[in-house]
Structures are given as structure tokens and as C-alpha cells.
Image 1: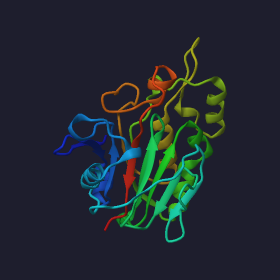
Image 2: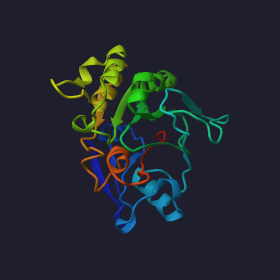
Image 3: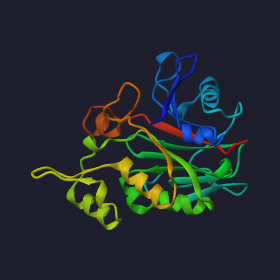
Image 4: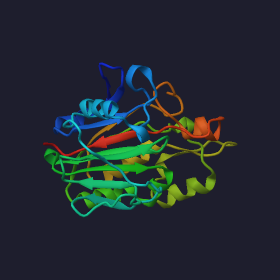
Length: 248
């Protein structure tokens, strides 16, 4: 599980005890911002940015670096040469304590990873397409060091993750058959967080904290594209963020 954090202004986030034990500053955000207002990660003002830095344990004014996510497996290293603004990808790796990695999600699985001592970190956006494409294994390879701890943030739960049989077949081909739930007369369901955990475990990561929150079910704190847009009347869904930087 992840530990709930509440800022003095009411902003809510979640933290992994395993990552915190390595001295790695990080945070999974929610839709709950200051004084109960909706937190919009796409339009962070200075006060909201400072609040998230404080909750995460970053130094004040730490820049957040994100990609244009495309549901693939491309990984970018945060260094003096990149990523360039607007770069496409779904995972970031870093050895930099002065800048934070940021991935967005709204049903997909946000994953934060750190090596021993928090020397290297990674942030991954992995929806069902990314899990099949291998976004997590690609990030672990780019990390270049054994993963010491990881955290899987809020995502769509097994109960709400109904998929077509063609998608279930893709999970089988990706050697993730154990995360598919089948019942006669119904479409398959996929356990996204179990798939992410399985891929982390295969890389040797044993300290893994997993959120039990469901983006669909826990709507007071979390946005869900499937709930709000696909099965609702909203033109768009908000997004939560997963933030991480190296230990200082």
C-alpha cells in the first residue's frame, strides 16, 4: 500500500514507504488540490508547484520534466542532452537530484523505480498497450542498475478493466496470462497492477509498494478516462502525476 499525505492547504498525495526508505523524494498526486479545488497538472501555478515539491520532498522550485506520452515503450534519459521539449515516450530515467521526472495517468499504471541508495530513478507510464509493449522492462534496462524498490500508483482495477478477447490474447503473447481473469459469458478482465508487479519482479525487484486505489471507483480523489469520458459525458478527464527525483 501507499501512505496518504495531506498538505496544510488540503492537497492530497500518496507516498511509497519503500522508496522513502531509500531517501528518494517522490509523490503520486490526486485530483484534490489546495482547499479542495481540482488540481490541474497541466496548469500548475507557483503555489501549487511549491506545494507538490513540499509533499514530495523535493527542493523548492524543483523543475518537473515530462514527455508527450504515446502508449509505447520508448525511454528517455534526463541529462544535459535530453529529452528535448515535446519528445515522445513513456518512460524517463535520471541520475539528477535537481530535476524531477513526471509521468501522467488517468487509468493507466504509473510506476516509480529506484536503484540502491536512490542513485538512479525511473518513472513509467504503462497502460495496457505499454505493458504489452514492454515499457517497464525497457525502463529497467535503461536504469542500468538493479531495481532496489518500486511503487505502483493508482490505476484502473481488475473489476473495471474489461477488455476484448484480442487484448487478452496480446497479454498472453507477452507472457502475462496470469493477469487475465475470465468468466464464461463475459469479456476478459485484466489486472494491470498485477502485470506491472510481475514485470518488476522478473527484473529482481522485491520491495514493491502497490496502491489499492482504483481510478474508476475512487472518484473523489482520482480522475478516470474510462469512467468520465468513455462511459460518462465529460469531454476530457483530468490526470494524476507520478513524480520522482534521485536521492540528494
